[in-house]
Image (cartoon, rainbow, N blue to C red; front, top):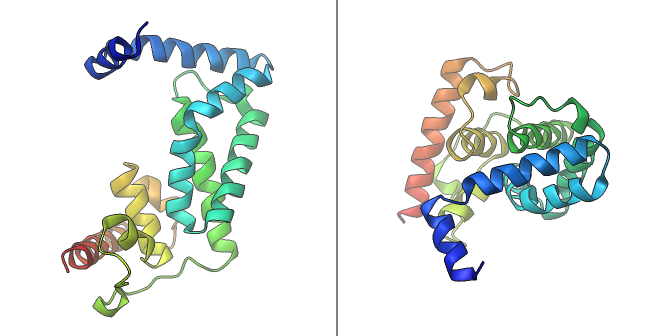
Length: 183
């Protein structure tokens, strides 16, 4: 299929079924023990997983190691993947759990109050502003606003916080980000 036609079909959403079928095929052959199928699957999803991990830990080398660790755990546990849970969501949860464990292990997850002078003048784009957030604020923002996790799902990582504290943290983080990118 010519590239232009394939791209047009992708834009129109007509290849989504084909892609889903291919991913399901890769999952099934991975479950049967074929590493090549799993590697092909990882080739498709690794950028997505790495982006989430990097945003959470804010350290390139740590993000690489945690992404590999999550993908390796995925390989070891692929046979337990339920057919009613999307593979990307399942592997992303593994990666987020590893990221949170590392942040907690390094004592980087501590409640912090955002102040206007915390804004880094190196860049005014959103990605830079997110990167410069204190770890807890960054994690809550990334999980909720960028990854679509509910407060209940985020609370799994912060059991000491109540729902209102998570919500307040997110509101303050959003206000901080708006202030930092409008300067």
